[in-house]
Image (cartoon, rainbow, N blue to C red; front, side, top):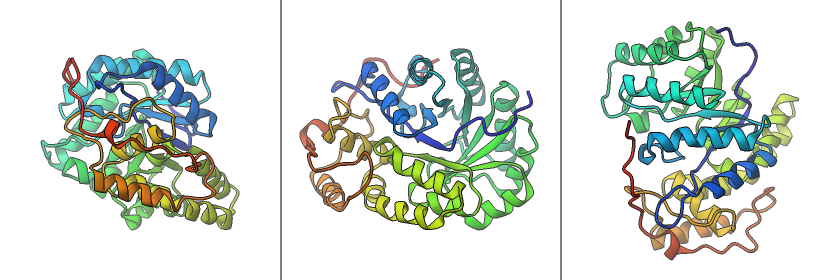
Length: 325
């Protein structure tokens, strides 16, 4: 299939998966959260990604998240399925199921734990991209997968007609510039602290964790960059910095985002699934200290913030185990 333009959006939320206190997916909370972030300016939602706890979701839950996302977004935002698998055959089946469920695009992560060679990475991405008509975002996050997608591999993958973009969590800005100069790939910042630097050298948008809490400021930054107003973009970037630090620095972003969203009264429980656990007392205290520095951020009013360290403590063992076929 030939894809034209940008089929992904620019302000993409790496969606948390709200859960009940016993670790089951809280489907009404999922619907409300998707509606909240879309109403606040997100034009793309990545479900079942790292932040969505893809490693501990069942395949049925992953497909259902696509279906729910499509229903709630109702054309207001693109629904992109993330995660995938470190088994190529399994990844292909997951993405085919997501396509049938109505996903607008897919995001393929580098196979993790196996530590394949670049030839293996190239083959994995090509076979998955061959198996779907959906536009593809490559997800380059060596801190989690153990291996990067090297520059030469990116250039080769860019020739595939379905591979249109890459989510960059390496922070190698010189490589980003080289790839932008030599391919037609769209770049999405995968590092909340570096969204503006990425945009300033030509990135298309972001796929952000902190955007779960405050999508509106990212809409401001992207729109300002689009119209060439670096001053306005920088001012919003600086306002966001304490919130990004609180969310992304002290515990996994999923854990902090749920803790903060629960304290704001926007999800019913901060629960995560094991092996993730809620912040320890000292971690929660640091997060709360950082949040006290947040001012003037649209959608992030902490004047009535009510964190619940007890509700967040520990992690849940769901009734059905993780990525089953």
